[in-house]
Image (cartoon, rainbow, N blue to C red):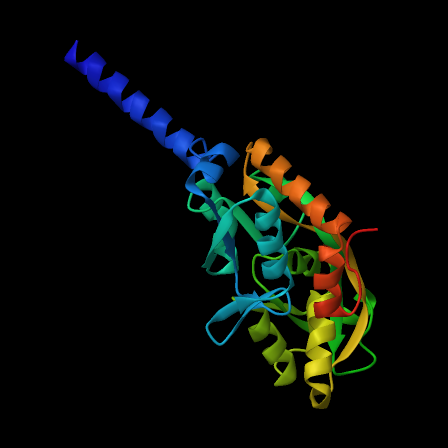
Length: 258
């Protein structure tokens, strides 16, 4: 009998751990409103979308999320950490929402629930050599890319690439190109655009899209009510002109998905 009880307790504990791992304890929007704040995670290393100016976290996605929180009637608390830990943290109920330029993919959608996309973009090829512009031009070349990103996943699909060098931060992948350690760098179009404008002496040139994608924030898998509230807030700031104002501040254009 004691053995049965011990086995039953072990099974119950295992079940509870599985629930926790799957995000069963994720806060509902009612919980968030009762607390008065939403906890949002981002990377803080991906200018101009999310980055630090000194000690201040800023960028397009940061301002966007703060505007959405205002529409939801709650304050916000930011968490900044490595890109590859962001979605994993949702499954551990460490924060309510992630906004860090995650492209929507089938694989990621198995682990988290995505909201409606807050912009559309894609991965572009950046090189110093003007002859490197298309996927075909990457044959035999060494490419730098941030690990854990859709840029990495898509570069791996390109045939006959000599080597894909991965870095923890996108800025490190860019530095590898600037210092001649790689032949090309693949990153977001708007990140590339900002990098070229900020460093015209670097000799970097923008090539073609390697792929296009929709970018969205994410919540714990199955937390559809919270995703719905975020979607309503996004629609509201797009309707009242707030989105356009923020977008034009950072990109001089409206980057919402058309």
